[in-house]
Length: 289
Length: 272
Image (cartoon, rainbow over all chains, first blue to last red; front, side, top):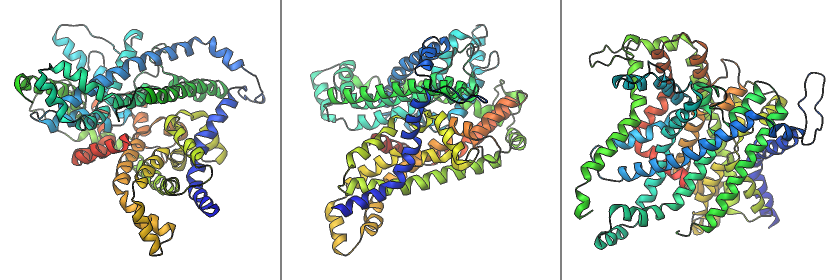
């Protein structure tokens, strides 16, 4: 018995050391750093208690990026899911050119987000990009979608949905294929309408997938910010800046690492909340399988 | 599908195609500009002359060959280490009963939620302490202990029939032989699925490599592309689009060739 413990620990050791060195250790260090000041020049870092958190509460940029990120998540997650379900339902039909259709939906998933950003930057170019070309055909004026504070965040959301919907589609496809055809046959005998079938059979049975996808999409809305670097740099006026992008700016542009750590603690807290929420939901709502 | 359901098939087909074309349009536009002279960027005629000039121009203006090499070293290095470490860890979790098993597994699962991607500041400090800033190793190191790989392999190993392992033990196989001869071969589909997901994730990764590298000899493609597209504001769109396609090409072509496997493996890796 003791020997297997030693065996097991030896086998686990290398993976655990690396894993903890770049996940748990930095997470704890981040919390400690958030209670200290940033070392600058000859001034060493000192313990400052909650001073960084007080600064957080009066930081308007922080409030704005947090709000941006919440709207960004609150819209991209349900929209991506709605489109992903539609895609899966469409592709699940035996329709003409199904191969091409499925490929078109899924292709953005394989592209680097940086490449996607370049493609859409070109697409959005005022006057020149395809969107303005099409608007021009209808006599509409030029629009600088990513140059205006009130449209830029939405323009970024479109990119995110375009990139992610096809990825989520495949989880729904798998789930659809596992639904028993006899349920649909029964519904057809009852003369249920298409919408009723979706609302009463398909959608409830897809619930575990929807929860899984929601949590992943929510994490991604805080984690994937590559396109912001290329397309807007968080601008204009922080209108498209998200929490992780602000962390990058504070920590690696202004080199205020203590405040960067404080912001990271907020991000960690949000992810923790998501994890707890997932647990809670999975326990209570998902009893189909 | 019976009765009235038959009549809306054309409608469903139409909806599917409209959405597919919308989804394909941004990429199609990038492909169009990349393969035509700059004067045809917004001028769509069927007989526009095709050219590879944009690709040649991008290739000549930035060290893309070096970036390609860096990215390939990076993704192979990460994948090999991930798989070796995760195989042993997953085997221990799946096969042995030992003190602290549940706590350790819980610690592993934490990484599924809190990824190294968001702990930029402290991981940078660690790399500076190790003297690894601006190395390819530093880009890969935080990802080498992969909770995702451990989790997937553990799930697979747990499905291996006990009788198979017992039979091998009777024939005198020790733990390592057992792992190598019985468990690893049975987990081949899992390795393939994880491999695809890992390679595409790290081929596409951007923020951490951006922070930890600052020279041509270490920069991966994504960072190289962003530097190329950003600094030279004079570069024509057609050339930037060519560079963009070039950096995505290996994954894109692999995807088009092995579409079915890609989709199935992404699915397998995601569903757990």
